[in-house]
Image (cartoon, rainbow, N blue to C red; front, side, top):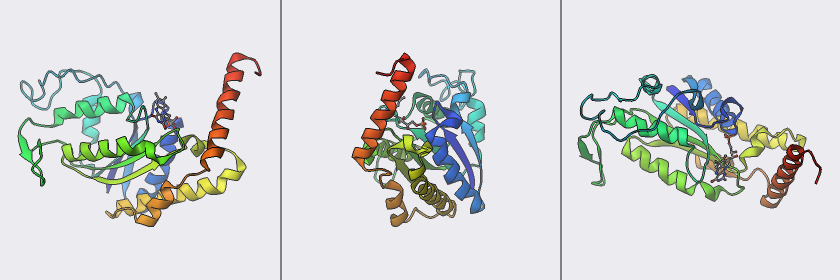
Length: 243
Ligand SMILES: Cc1cc2nc3c(=O)[nH]c(=O)nc-3n(C[C@H](O)[C@H](O)[C@H](O)COP(=O)(O)O)c2cc1C
């Protein structure tokens, strides 16, 4: 399956999102899929101006001259679009949102009804399914409620589906070098790799695997204490004091 990974973190190659994407893509490639990664923050993506020129005067062509035509070309022939990003204010980072807003140039204005009788566009320019890999800083999985609904709705709107969604609270632990955490992290990344393998074969992630992927890495209290200690350390280093 031809896969495109879009990394939506401003931290790009050094991001927790990329740790998730790397493991997932490894599984996809093991299953015979092909894939490349695009770091969205390396591209010039301006905001949609809402002029609708791409639906009227110049169908499918946006008035803005930036990197979006190049990015839209990357979507040709892609069967699975992996979206790896951090949770920002219960949603996606602005650059990723700007990318999706600009994808409306691929749509045409003509309406259609979905199976539930709800309106969407007949032609959406998005032929690929979505796989969502999102991590966040808080310790609970409940923080992904809005983003889960958001991507389900976006997929409906683009006339596609969410093939897989993996949410990782306590995301900062994904790059922890703490010795005691390594067996846990290795098991987690092996599970993510397995999820990539399964999704490439066109199957949903099995419930037991999904449940393992959603388990907390650390108990909430331990995570909160470690996070607070880490922020305190950073503060005192930045301030050049040890208060
Ligand atoms: C602007 C901003 C908004 C954030 N909003 C949330 C949030 O709503 N909930 C949350 O749990 N973490 C939030 N975070 C924390 C990030 O999701 C977290 O640091 C994540 O691990 C970063 O992943 P990355 O390395 O892939 O960029 C926010 C971080 C930033 C910089």
